[in-house]
Length: 147
Image 1 (cartoon, helix red, strand yellow):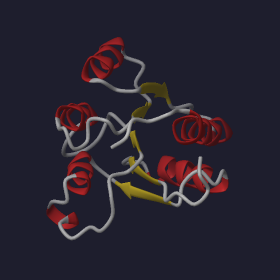
Image 2 (cartoon, helix red, strand yellow):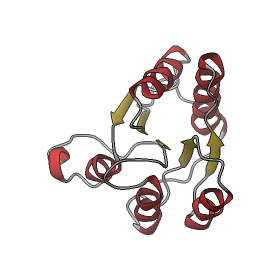
Image 3 (cartoon, helix red, strand yellow):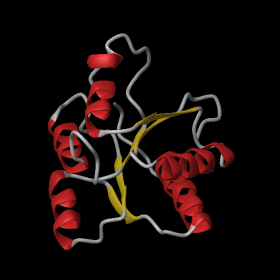
């Protein structure tokens, strides 16, 4: 990853504790210049499409979306469906980070075009390591398409 490149991650997570652990892991690993955190699915869509409270948001699309599935207002599945259906956002890598191990959620996520599906561990250290590893892979190892 070019150290001069501005890297932005959108974290869509309703749990303040999980959000704090993820943000800390990404920052400590120097994987992102900014991590923007939204607390529900509607905020995620507003952020991505510059609507609602994000109408005047400056900046480009994030290089990575970390998405919880069990979200208030608009579910993570619906957010994923909209992201992958819109030409402005469909190339953004989306990693589902959720507590759900339900086969239906996994299958539907992949059917909709998720790039990766990981189950959040309950252990603090394991959660921190998972966030750091996911960020490192998608931002430093993976070769993304030109947006």
